[in-house]
Image (spheres, rainbow, N blue to C red):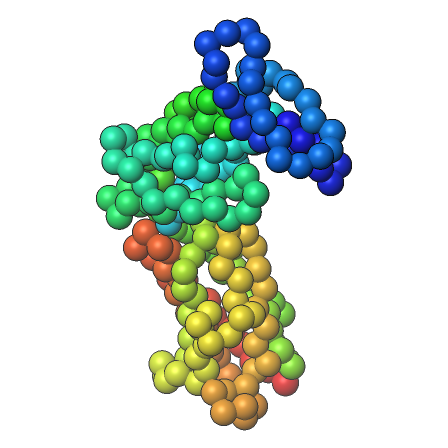
Length: 231
């Protein structure tokens, strides 16, 4: 190891067949010969061990010689999964299409640069059916109203459609064109200014708001609520 920038950096190992290691250094500095006999550790940041239908993220940490990047392999049963590095020690795995609606029998293999290996196996549950909850307040609405929606899982797409009492659309927006729509699994608010698609104030009366959501695994849900506009 070479001490550089406040940390010990692994230079490599040489097997000699004896108890006396041999090594060479190419620069001056503080060096040390240390034994790394501890394998890396693997952990997940998936909440409650449920995957999101698109990818899985995990973390590999090693406080000795450091991870050997070429050694990191991930399998769903016996099929290899594409793995990419997000940041130092953090990885993301793209799921196979067949795995997106199924539990994932995951196996991760990794080694550090000293050759210590680890195999981590776990089963990540598939997300259940997408469930959407929607409420509106204040109702009756006089100058604005807010839609509070709750998503049971992350979604790829959200669409809000407002119709008048005859079923004619007066306002339409979606997450592709409006970043105000949050798509992660939680409760969120979206405000409507009681205006139509062209920014004109809508007339007093009864309206219907329909919220549609779609997840990456194809699961969908749709909810409709009634709104009274009364100024």
